[in-house]
Image 1: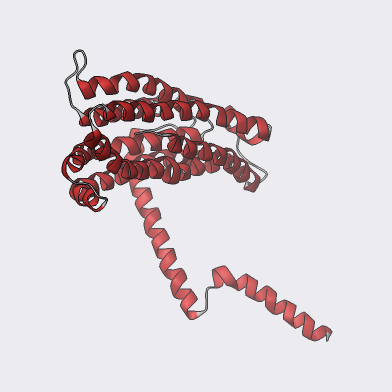
Image 2 (image 1 turned 60 degrees about the horizontal axis):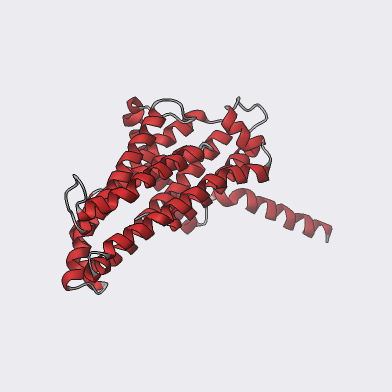
Length: 319
């Protein structure tokens, strides 16, 4: 169930993309490598015009996804109050997944890609595309396992019972079985947004919505050659939308037309690099806490301590 909240997260990510690319470029040495045209436009273009160009496609996405939520709710309401109440129970969890994939983690992905490109680190940006794919797969599986095992208990705690609980379980089992598709869609879209290309994700979203709006009632009520799935039909339509969009994004990245390509041959090395980076971060965190407990964190506080000591010495000599 896509809504305007997901689009708002994408809009915030688009603003961060331009800011992160500029800040990373400022922090680079003078002998910076050459940039492609899209990255150079993010770095050197007028700030106001750049932000407008990044935000305009997301306005269309917000309108399209808002219409999806209204249309899907209208058709599910035709099935009765139990069906509508059941979907309402699942909606907060679906929104949590969408906000995490599009806003929290997705915004971090686009920001990381933008900073790597702005600093001229093309190899790191290419690796981040694969890392985003791995993260999307991992979090998607977590949502699938958690909601398939404990979804019914959660909806009971939220007040579901009888027909509404049955409808919630039906919708939830379908939508969260394909949670990986939602995460892949938003992860790959944010990698593309991180390169400054807002138009292509917006185009894919709007075309997908144009197909999703008539497809949803067809699967809910069994219109034409489509079978009747009832409340599960709305979930099937949403998953078809995310599956098709993920395939388009992956094909675009794999084709090499994107600033950050997606090379399947580098997937195992990227996975190994991600594991090494995570282990190194955990090790740094442990060492940092240990050093703080002994009061000897020289890397973080040594220079500051020496500076303060010199200032105190100068004051005593001056006195």
